[in-house]
Length: 260
Ligand code: DAK
Image (cartoon, rainbow, N blue to C red; front, top):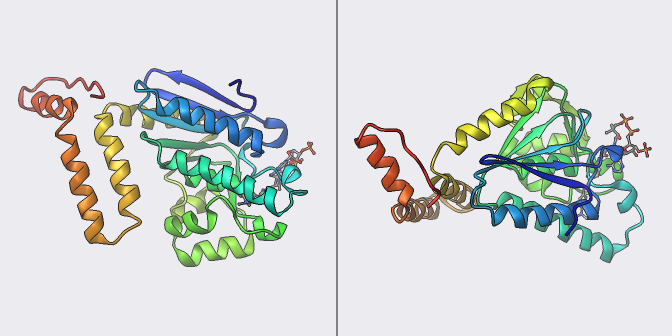
């Protein structure tokens, strides 16, 4: 399928997905969500890609939210359909079998902030701005904001941000734990690649299983979570990369992981 609003590039082990609708500050319309769904299919099947960077075209905006002009005339059924599509795509991204780093240049508002939160790690430029402005538009956050924001920044801060629609700058986002790192705008992609390449040096199956254990473990009690970790730990021992990593250590040589 031809992509209209999303591009996919690959640089060795790292794939870069760019939301490319700069005329609407990369707002998410259903066409863009469908493109993202297609790109996720491709990434799922790409055994040579170990890490994904998700970004927005241009310097002004990562994603300025769900597309308000498309949403404004939706009826109840269409609103539900739009929500189901968005949530499906966001969950697929969150559960993708490789880490996703959001590289956030500018606005990450509403669905844009929610998209960043569905990623594993967020790197923001000093110019980035974050908000959940939905209640000011007469709606609730619909792509997981009421659920992922409190999990990331705690209940009180999430409620404050969601009820007030306050827009916060990158330094505040870093302080409250919404982003992992803040860097100068001109270094954003370089920093994202540096982190992606560092992750890609490690055993991809082990990284994938860590993502699985963390994501699933955070949703259940500690006893179930430890059982999930034990299962994922066990799975490593059926991989060639576990043998390679440990043999390389014993033999004092460089390791060479094959994603097997
Ligand atoms: N949707 C559509 N177009 C947008 C947009 C958006 N979210 N944000 C910006 N644009 C468009 C503007 O309309 C403008 O288009 P033209 O007039 O040039 O054709 C162009 O991008 C440039 O924007 P501005 O002229 O406004 O640029 P400024 O620098 O003056 O302002 C801004 C930048 C980001 C502060 C401003 O554009 C802004 O406030 N944008 C809206 C931000 C916002 O409220 N985003 C949250 C959207 S609500 C659900 C699923 C999802 C959601 C809810 C429910 N269900 C489960 C059903 C999610 C909701 C949201 O994300």
